[in-house]
Amino acid sequence: MGIYLPPALLMVASTRALEFIKKSQAIRAALRGIRPAVVGMIAAAAFTVGGTAPHHWVSLLIFAAALVALMRLRVQVAWVIRQQGLQDCCCSDAAVTHGRHDGQARNGSFHLRQTHPHG
Image (tube, rainbow, N blue to C red; front, top):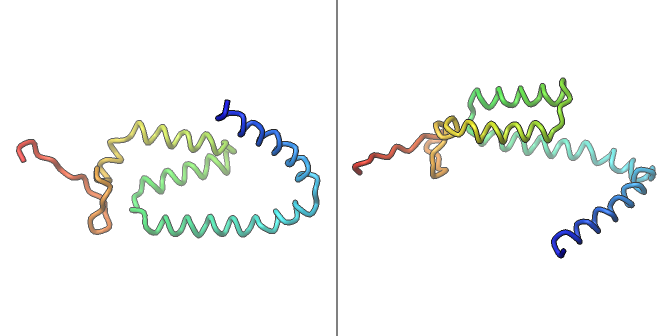
C-alpha cells in the first residue's frame, strides 16, 4: 500500500494540474521559450557522449535506422527503445567483441581480454 498509494495520488493531482496548464496561455508561452534551450542541451550532451564513445559503423547504422523509424515512420519512442534493448540482449556476442569484460579501454579502443585455460 505504501509503495502504490503516493504515486497514485501524485498522478491524480498531476492530472488536475495538467488541465490547468493546458489552458494557461502564460505557461504555454514559457514552455515554448524553454523548448529550444532543452533541445540545445540534449544536442550538447549528444555531442559530448558521441565524442567520447568508440566509433563504429554499426552505431551509425543503428542511429540512422532509429532516426528513420522516428521521423519518417512515426514509430513511438518507446518501441525504438524496446527494440534496442532486445537487440542488445540478442546480439551480446557483437557487444563482447567490441568491448572488454571488465569495461576498461586500452588506447581509446575496446578489445576482448583473452583468457587461457592454463594460465
